[in-house]
Length: 413
Image 1 (cartoon, one colour):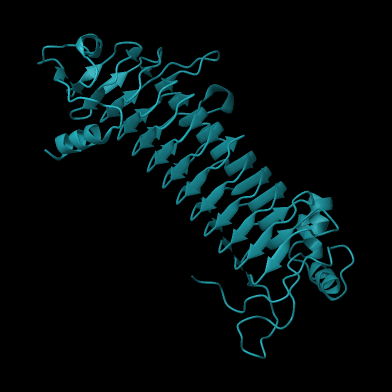
Image 2 (spheres, rainbow, N blue to C red; image 1 turned 180 degrees about the vertical axis):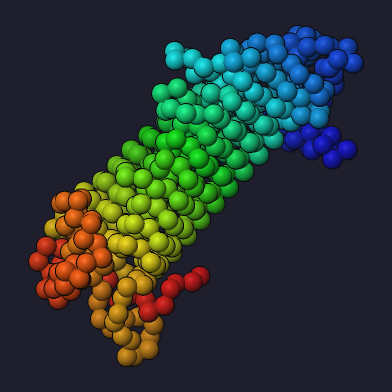
């Protein structure tokens, strides 16, 4: 009863359905024995109910504005040879299915569900298993991908696809999905004005989220953990990343968040914990970075000298091996009112801000940038001495890289 009500509600709000259609049933005990037979008879606005069972019908073309809804989670199998659902019509709703065993191709991007040049499509509450690419939208707009579980079997990047892949799309919502064991969990290229919210992306070979040449997008409340690297943001502008978790991304070149050639963004309220590098910036410009927690990372923040005019305010840096490093002798960013757990200053006027400026970049961090093998001296007394000497009289580290009034206690909203 609840399932039927959910389907009815989704149909009723689909923006391009202009009439209530007929309901056609597919299954061993129904008039239509195959999905393709039901689709052949269906008309615009109809509902195709797929009864519980096993269906192996090759690639299934959906070229009508209809609803395809599973009853009891029917299985649609690609027999490790085919892509499965191929949408070419607008206003298609796909829900309640288990889609599995897509073929692997090195010349075509086979997927469990593909939509090309479509709009107002909804892909909700499906399970996709071993699908090479899971859900793949090309030149789509105004679509929703919600509440799906996508589990791959990726072993090597070259022979694996992405769980959710968007290419040349606009106004897409990707909400409440769980994706893992693919090359990238979520991949976007040339995707604008899109919301990525409350997804869990983990155990992917390369990135939990990877996007390039995509502008005016919002990433809110997602968790990226135990991936080859967390999130890569490249060649984009006007990006907002708010209340996300970047967790347990470890490796020689791994990070929670990589920023490369991005401009005029906001990174706020996120947690960076247990990453080799919490946040890495290369040519990242005019970004507001505020109210984030950087906890127990190798490097909390590594911003190269090409990253300029960024502002770090009211962030918490707690228990990181290194809080901050750069490869430049100059600093072009601002650090204001952050909390640094290594700060040892005092607050005589009791206003909550330290009276002594704090220099978060240690000389040893600079040395490691020049010679990585020096990491073996990390806990030595000699490193403590040279860090103290650089703190008193900065020579190698940027003299302007300083928080003049650090917080005495961690920031809380």
